[in-house]
Image (cartoon, rainbow, N blue to C red; front, side, top):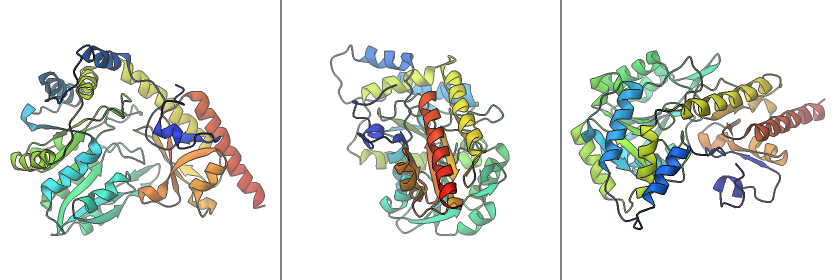
Length: 377
């Protein structure tokens, strides 16, 4: 879809310049017609006032978790919020006292780094480690970083930016660690419908055991998978009544409401049982394979297999560039700077675009790498 002239944040960043915007996690692919239809149907009523959570939205969400992931949750566990990002801070405020620690595996989605500051906490970082073709949590390091001052671990699965879909063995190890250290787990699972590799499946970490469910806040939203991120809305699943009450108190302190159009869109997405998402994921998997194949032929740049999300994580540290993001911008590629994710020398590539644009991006990447090699001979 051509988004120029629509005030798209993604495209406005490089407006008037020959730079492909492949940075922010916002797809150039259309949202499904059934979501758009639900929003249009809601617009037949001429008032878009402050809106309580519709029962249909709650029922759709509960059914979605049970049908898709086999996780049976109570409607009482759900708390609807304006978006996953504000949900992070609300969660931290609900489970931590000022001055305590928030442990965060890195690299991480940039807003994660601001959660501790906004909640008055101290951020403690645990680097992921590359093992073969994937990034993994370092449980020895995590165990060392979690102390009596640690209130919570802020976790992301599928992982942004590395594209990992953590398996049951890894998630079980995380559960054991959280339970044994009496820590709360805040889990960002917004990308859970976006599993691109058929050998993997998403498992909501709180669904594994009641012992972790009662010390967890899990954040979901269909806005990424169904591509309506500009229509804010999300839902937190909080089985523990005490944590849920504190989270609700934090929500009540925010002067924001979920739009009735957002409720309509989310309800339609959670009700979806069509093949639309499977087709979209297959297309994104094709994009990922194209980029991975191209990177495999280039010297000085590496990537790992994209199991989930629609982002690829490129290691360009061996190129010896002082500012990789700036260099590639001069070659017509606007990629997200790894510095913002806590990982200098890395770049995040958004795969949510049409195939012709991706092909152009791959050509520009190849030319940029070859140009560097020529200069250094």
